Length: 502
Ligand SMILES: [Mn+2]
View 1 (cartoon, rainbow, N blue to C red):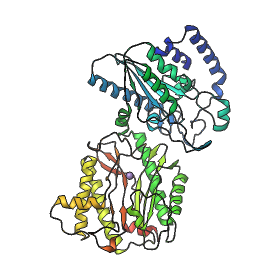
View 2 (view 1 turned 60 degrees about the vertical axis):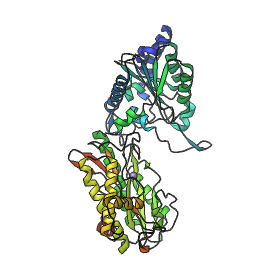
View 3 (view 1 turned 180 degrees about the horizontal axis):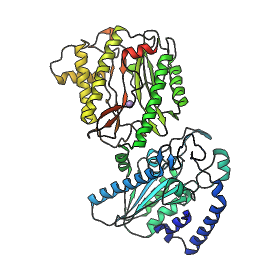
View 4 (view 1 turned 30 degrees about the vertical axis):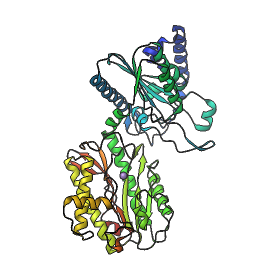
């Protein structure tokens, strides 16, 4: 059998700084420990043995994502980085890539916030525990790489309070990485690269530190190493995350199904006089009750004219009869986000003005989804939105006849000051390092979310429309055969919405 300690011994660089005796002792001890402990290993996250209702096969590290898929992600990540390096220069350099886990954050003494893993780390490892680190090393010829996962040290006291951890001796087998070490060895590991005085590129997102321990080790290394450069590896991860695998599509479909059903229930449950906070509580409950971990972001629950405040999240006002509610809510399901917006009349019946504006937005939204079948850029989708909204507003006489498309688009942009789309995936605003100026392609998931917000200070639209804010947002998977609306279970047509409340 291939024990973790043997892997440790063969890890090229780290081994050099340890004496032969130390390694031999470590190997012997590890084999003995493994024989004793194999029956009662502990893990810091759900496994097939401990949580068969969540992890349904032995190969899955996280729900639906197998050890092989994680290993392929690391492989593809290294390929991308190596390709980039080859394009840049012929210089022989070694590469050290450092991807930290997020750390636990506290709101006050010993009171933690809900933990959310660093998406890059989660994507490349599947490890859900805080305060670890992934290091991938690539040799000078760019021909081989090795992954080492640093996990938290054993700490019986802390584990009594916070639950079990995954130990370094179990991590290679469980996560499929080449080696694993306790996080306390991270500094030694990184600084060992200083000692052999060769050129090295450190890949680390220095400007966005997510964990102090790793950041300090990297900072020390950079201060004390002459022949090195530092660059962020995050864009290579984003390039991979942009395209969803079949398992990821299945997870996103479920995330969208859960949010869609929860929002439909929330709509039918709401009534005049309700507080926005109750609507928030209902959608939160309904997503969790269906298996989501939590809402993917603080939802916008905006009654009446508060809907014209794009990022309204106070959610503390009473919704009066005849008012609309705009709710932008989505959930996170095993690490994948949904992001849906619906707008509905609290009493179940659109007024004439509300209906007119709603139809302007809905018609545009449906056309925009169809337009996704031509694989436009997200920026082109935005221009299309301005044009469609402008035309619809003109047709319904909400705005006057405009002299040209240019004017139409400008008039629409004043009523919808936000972009129409972003990428969606593990993060709500997914892969932000990817430009919105590239053509969308099969495997990507994007949002389509036009809106119209008519504030009281609007000078071009008649007074009876003031205070109306409407957005309709769906999540769309791009495929060869056209766009697939993942949030299709969430009603959006006027009759559907009105009938929900009958
Ligand atoms: Mn969105």
